[in-house]
Image (cartoon, rainbow, N blue to C red; front, top):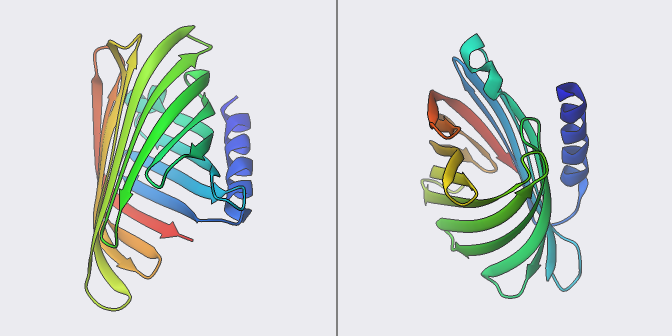
Length: 214
């Protein structure tokens, strides 16, 4: 099943990369115990730029036997309607190798300038496997300080919280990155703080990351 899921993810990511539009971002993170690969693409699908397809894909793999149950592969395309420069809303289908399929509706707020990007995405979803409704909040920030013409210093953060039935902790993470950007390539040090299940079992990882935006 996981091999089939990984093939589906890679195929979807390949399609996303070849779409014309705003941007595609890929990131590779490696620590002693954890390896992750993430892709996020955001592409306009009409001339008015009122509709865009945002595609998220990821692969997470733990080396240690005690954490291998948390290995995940996931894919999530979302169709957003942009009713202003900052606010969007839209449906998505999310597949996770552990949790199965979910139908979701999300709102998105974006604030950005030359140095700072802030993204907030609250979501309500329905899990087919668990047959329950859940709430999710996602937040992201990116801050950069130019050093030279094509070199800048970056700090990035991503934060996720998921509650089953709006009250029971299901999944959360905090991902922090700091490094140097050379044109469209970034590399540096990363920290992943992951929490799983109602008891919030935690795993932490410090490692190195590489990110490319094109």
